[in-house]
Amino acid sequence: MNLVPTQYRNVSVAEVATGLDEASLRAHLMGRPVYRRTQYLVARRGDACAVAEVSKESQQPLFSPVTGVALIAGAEETAFVDAPETDTGVPTQLARVAARCAPHARCVVVRGRYGHVSFIADPAPARIRVVEVVPPRPAKLVDQLTRVLDVAEDLPPVELVPDLVDLAELAASRPAEHYLFPCRAGGRPVGAGAERGGGTGRAPGVSYLDEVPPRRPWTLVGCARSRAIHDWFYGGPVDTVDMCPRALAGPGPVLTKCCLLEDRVAVDGGVVVVPWGASLAQVKEGLQRALEAVTEPVAHAAGGGPNAAASRRRGPASHSADLRASGTTMRSAREGGK
Ligand SMILES: [Zn+2]
Image 1 (cartoon, protein in one colour):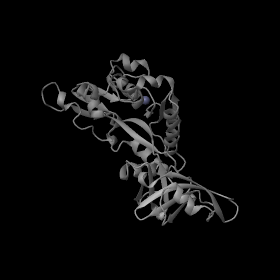
Image 2 (cartoon, rainbow, N blue to C red; image 1 turned 90 degrees about the horizontal axis):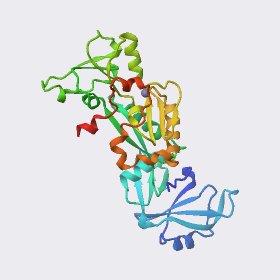
Image 3 (cartoon, rainbow, N blue to C red; image 1 turned 180 degrees about the vertical axis):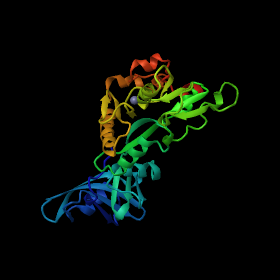
Image 4 (cartoon, rainbow, N blue to C red; image 1 turned 30 degrees about the vertical axis):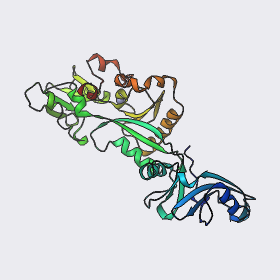
């Protein structure tokens, strides 16, 4: 699975006049000198191509005779794709091109940036669920992960599975006349609660905690940190909807972020959590931990099958009990709204 050459220099491309089956390629290649770095050969004939692994007599001289040929993928299961924007040194980029341009091919040869040719055989990217809230859009953690994966030469192919919780929908799960969101910078959650505004048809009011507005009856749509800030400025009880992705994520494997985590990546079973303001380095570390979680699923992840979907929003809450005691609903509006 996910066979990808470690370097483009390991891949040679040859136009051949023979058949592309193993016997023909072997007959053609045996004894021929190949470059010392060559490990894989992409053999092309017209529009068809096949991929073979070659062994050599020695890796010391610059060129050495071929002593063995093993077919990796024959012509009927191999596609050749021109993708000049693709960095063929990055497994995730190869897997993306394969899925987009040749989803049915067992092996996809890609000619990408700088004209470099590489391939991916039996692509099976690790699927990593990413839970976070929007706005802002694009979802920040998903966007950061995408950018990290764009250059992740040292990681196996990954496919992100964004699981986004819309703050407006989350707010609408708890109808109120007025909502308090953490900050304006994230963008106004569109139509928060408007469809369930008590039948008046009037959109609820919205304020932002970072502007420290005058106190009024409101429902805080925020994380544990916003709740603590609210307590600092206003004190007293406040109706709260917890929007921390960690609290919404449910059982792993999952990659998410938390308002309370400031300077490190935390792993709890298959739940990998990066700080709310994670750097790209922390995002990459989280990605590596999440890869370990999906390749070695933890025991309790067994409860996360398709039938667990209805309950996963009520997954293990990771914040102090006072949030729940204040009547917090840790459930996405998607459950009740559809
Ligand atoms: Zn949190």
